[in-house]
Length: 110
Image (cartoon, rainbow, N blue to C red; front, side, top):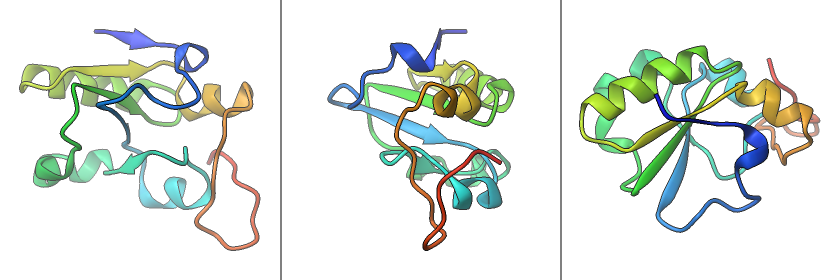
């Protein structure tokens, strides 16, 4: 399973790549990466057509477990997917940018 540490991802993703956040909606609402596309793991199979057409898809969750499973599934079905190890916990810990869908709230990882 290909994996990458949050520190290894550039501030702006390489051209023709995408960041897929597979956490649940309540997790997404309180904090996520600004460029991420949100498709919860529980809805992935029904929403495969919403995965961005990209040469490489980086998959992130809270700590790296769900995203590893999704990346493995995507790789087995024709995508080039990479697990973001340590997930949004790691992302947040190193100070990478985050946004919240909740007006006036500082983003955080739930």
